[in-house]
Length: 123
Image (tube, rainbow, N blue to C red; front, side, top):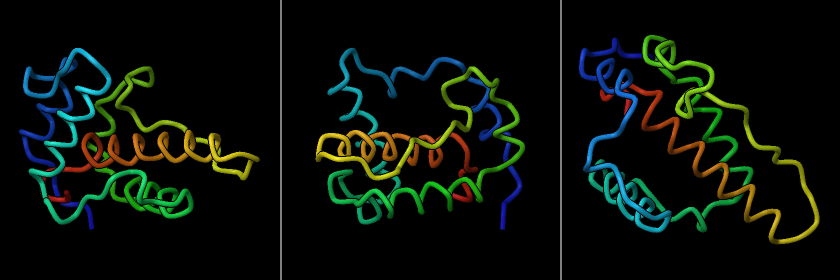
């Protein structure tokens, strides 16, 4: 069940530049900042990406896509990095490195869906 969007959800979706509390100057710093915000939502609900298997993340991504709020998603232009994107190819390929890259891409996609496509109430 998709909950009605609130003005704060739509305002967040309309903001093209994240607030200072959501920025960092390095990739590692950005990971720390965003992980900190996820833990504020629920310390018990989030696990490190490395704890997941690719099929589980693909299923979670599909579940979040089904819960995406149409009023919020509609606000993102196709070329906006927050818009619903194409799922990474999760087909098996040889090598642990490929699996890690696919897993990490799915983790980013799952977090994007959680943060940018759901209303606060649905989160």
